[in-house]
Length: 342
Ligand SMILES: [Mn+2]
Image 1 (cartoon, rainbow, N blue to C red):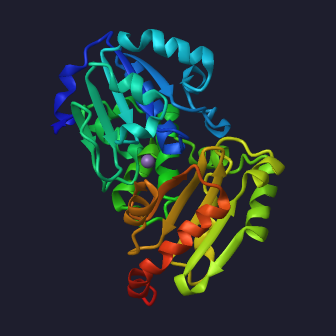
Image 2: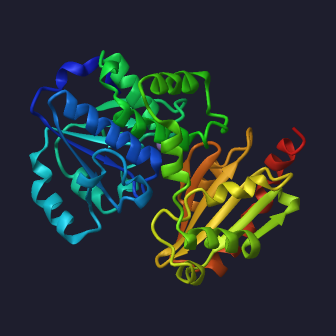
């Protein structure tokens, strides 16, 4: 793996840079992409951000958000297909498995343009030329901070760029309470505050921006679609297509819902199943030291972080998905029993 940090000289003024991130982008995906875009704008590179799916509305305040392209919009897709050959570099942020960018993956895979991965997920695939990859980093935004620092450009972080960075750090640490919240995280945030980032505003923009429908949807989930399976110390939640229609669910609306399961006393882990037209999507959360990434990879074509993973059951409805899940739960009892009394 070639280190990105050692290779600042590769990037020359005027070069066109494509920045992309994963499907259903979260705050770290968008925050890191726009931090890097704003940074590259400042040093005379020509960056563009392409998303495989739409930008959730609660990130639209970030500087540069209005300029991103969305592969799921026909007009944007056409521009992407016509201009994929125009770039000098492709930066892949907050993912390291090419499948995570869905429709965009073929376009990107098939170019010979040199690629860079900046990411903190486990088990990176080997499709890039340069890496800034650290599974101990709490967020990709933290790695963008490290990049700017190592390249001697920390002074270019202004309040707007810093706000994008703070958004990703805040979200991927669960507002500084997940076990990935190191002293390094707090030191970076302290610097961002000193650089003028209004952290309270970022928090409000992301977390206090629910539609009434979304709040009622959450109420429905907690009152009707949450079960505690005490033998497995598991908070199990699910949302059918019907539920999503009833509450006019928009992209990004279910973000963070799975975390509520861990608030049940005694819960070691939480699973949220969401029915989609092409199958069922699963989100996993757990408390240290219980790992969910292996479970997600082994049974649900997924993976992610030790305490926060995702997966899917293609071509399944909710009823079948729940059966599949219930069948593999007993296999986790060993791990559950080891952890439950800690
Ligand atoms: Mn991330």
